Image (cartoon, rainbow, N blue to C red; front, side):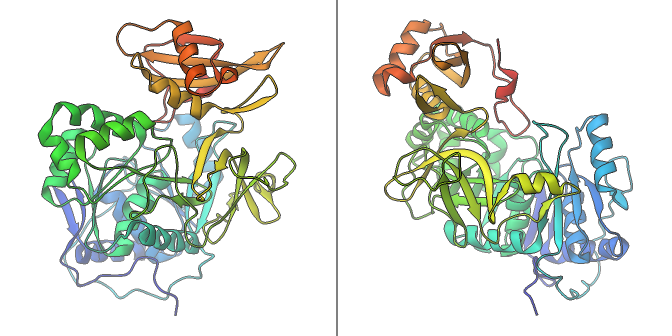
Length: 464
């Protein structure tokens, strides 16, 4: 019999979930999810209004117990996008929010788990952000979630003794699968702090937290506040592991956190369609700008435009991956699925180089971060990191814009720190650190960069 995706832990009196003052033990979660599973069983799929609450976790665990795929929905979603997702996925139930209530009745005796569904059975359907059209439903099977969480456990030395602290949304892979199902699969705990605040993270770490999951904007705030607050820095320094993902963490924030707390952040790299592909190991070198080697079971290669494998180290290529971590396809979109697969390899659209020791260094997205200027292929990420080393730069995004002479010119969008430096000063700074052909030809100053809910810069909004 296959191992359950989420073990029952029916007699576990240890805390499994904490959201503010509300909590459930593993035993209470098993009782509540078991009851709801009976109501869900028989539906083709359900949708969950994925608020950061105990109820959302109970509903998702119940769906997994029932063997029914769940569609987590952003509770701040707009009407048009919601209509698209519901029309596309056609859930039999929409649980949570102002829709059908999610009961949390933890008293009683847990029901035994039924037979574990086949590993290819869909577990979750997570909709992409829809940057290039309507959101697509990424169908994730049970074997992808189980194998990936186990690979992460090996990389991060993650056990049932760990308490994961985060404030991530529960309608994405990062917050829901890694940040909730990950601890539950280990038999550990998750402490969700609600809306991210450095004081809340410190409080959770003071209580019993051992690991922190976050995105770069969260670590940027932690870096700033830890530099000002020795008590906060000490609390963060006591964490066993700080993990950053969803976007690249600037080298400057790596350094600031290390100086203030003594901790070096672990970076990992993944996508909705692949879950996590690579990670720096807990016992490995935590080198800024890199996301470590492939996880156990994940194959990775870098290829040229025509699919030829990049022959030499430290040459830019597109990341392709294959392994048990891959999705089944896009719901109702065989055409879109076919377009991202090549001979069993998933084409990520991310550009990277492999360093001599096998660590992956991502330089950006093919569509927005690979700049072809003057005959060179240039990754926007390395220019952004160089600019962030300038004391007059608080935040930055680098894009390419059409240029009759160069093909594309490098444009830097800068949020200044204090008095803005001159464009010439920043251009010379990059030329000195990297190379003359990588210097920005245009510098535009902004009050803030456009970001989505996960803290990623929306480069398609930067133009002009």
